[in-house]
Image (tube, rainbow, N blue to C red):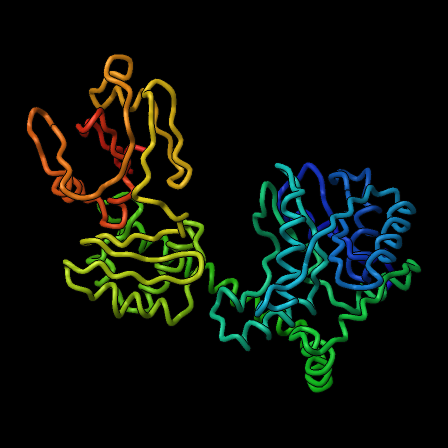
Length: 419
């Protein structure tokens, strides 16, 4: 293949607009080809290009790789940023996952509004990702493998070479006489992707030469299926919204078939920016949460999220920092008071809206429920517990509601829906 027949422009035009491209440049063949192609497009209406190299600190040759990347970027006239990260895995953590998390965390931190991060993932990478997800028992979201682009930090992450074969990249590199780094860790078959790449894929490819293209096409089919499931979930979620803002109605959910409930819940959690649960935890929601009695308050939790039920409302929650219910804070009522563990701020304006004059009635104490509190509401003394029940405050929120006292008298309660 002659390099002139290799045109990146149609693929770039499928990506969102950008003020500049940041190229994740490892120094290997794939990212070198991508960087070289983008450098050749300067002055033809595409954004400025900047290379970014992540120094993981894991390989003895890492400093030499930085020097190589600096030399290549100088020849191409492309600015280079070198990001140093600690990519060591924690106990029990996959080294691959730790390095990937550190790498993308550093790259995301560099993105500014309007930036596009470009990586050199290609057709063979897509095929490998599909097989790895299949071995993990993934559904359509996993089997769709890598999307052409997705939001990332303040910008987005694009993969303009997903439809290009590895052989095409090698031919381009030879034609342009590129030099690149060979990372010896890519041969370490303790890592799943390396085992797949060096032993399993070659054997499959010998029998089915079009394997990469075929598996990439299968991933595209799964992505299309995922899109249709998303359309269905959006229709369902419009009919499932609970009376409490941000919740789903348990009664409405119970009218759907189990597969459709699971689909709606997955997209609802995605909508809220929460991680999708393992299938076993999702099944627990159907078995234990949706079928619980009206007075029960079941909870199903997994890393990064939990689902709780109160009355007819299903709540999705992110983990919250610990809060000390014995905390007491002095407050003058005239300046804002921020409560770190709750992520909220009490203001003089809010206090005045509760019928309390900060200038005449202070100072105050802010405390939390211990039981037995009463509050004057429209001339009547009411039990705080009953007020919370009437307002539909879930039990797990009640001990986190700031109570404002003047002396021994409770004068105001900050309800969550006022924040």
